[in-house]
Length: 341
Ligand code: ADP
Ligand code: MG
Image (tube, rainbow, N blue to C red; front, side, top):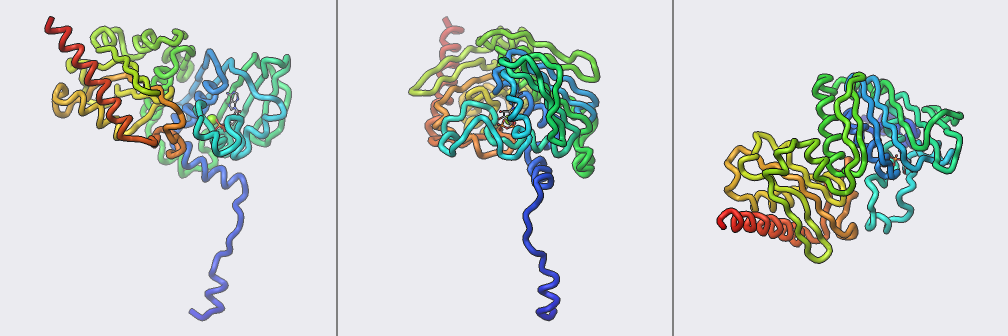
């Protein structure tokens, strides 16, 4: 190759237009319809909703509609909500150390809007008029109660490659249901209704800050009845919840719920601590059921490490690991003493 051809073949660097950049970002955040549902419901929770309705058709491919009675969005902010890196939840980097909201990156709505037919309708509690905005970022008057509705049709219509990777309607539906149940377990003070293909899948009434009622709704009455309650506190950490007993093991790990500050988290160090505490109470090939809520100072975790925010990094992993192990060991020991007396 002479130097002329080399120069001609070398692609030059150019800035991607916003639409393409959003679609690429969507690839990370929006893996499947369930990820869209998760992002939208988390936005409703961040908006202090007390009631969230989720309507889905064809497992989210033809319709996902999430409605809430939360604080709403200012009319003049509607178009910003659809712009990348636009958020009301943080302003400076140091805010990340104190994040208590589920979202903070400002990328979900623009990503979702770039791969679907999108309509956002919202009414502020101080307003008597609602407004909506579509993909073209046109703001129009609309009818809506206080709160917000995001309606998405034809998910991934603009990225057929992504559509091809979707599993059957049944599988995608089960992913949505599983994610909604997990979110509902983490937020018992919010009422959730979920309909699929216009049929009711579940309706969970709000049950205050005590998750017991919600856990009964989701895991059945026998879970809490037979489980060990745990409530352990050290320094600035509190671990509460219920530990399923050996008779309640399952063939899958689908009932292992661990929440950190209300967010469902997968963490290998935490899993390790829990496994270690259960030790040989769980036969090989079986999985314990548990629902555990860890409250920890947000400054001691970094939540900005995973596209779906389902993992965290701890400033002191060892300390958290040992705290969880000790909390479970105390709970199991208490149980032994009780049953022997
Ligand atoms: P993030 O949640 O990371 O801030 P999103 O793209 O999910 O980013 O949402 C952008 C912004 O739109 C949010 O910061 C919030 O101000 C607003 N918003 C989104 N959904 C809702 C909702 N259901 N109710 C009120 N405000 C919302
Ligand atoms: Mg969000």
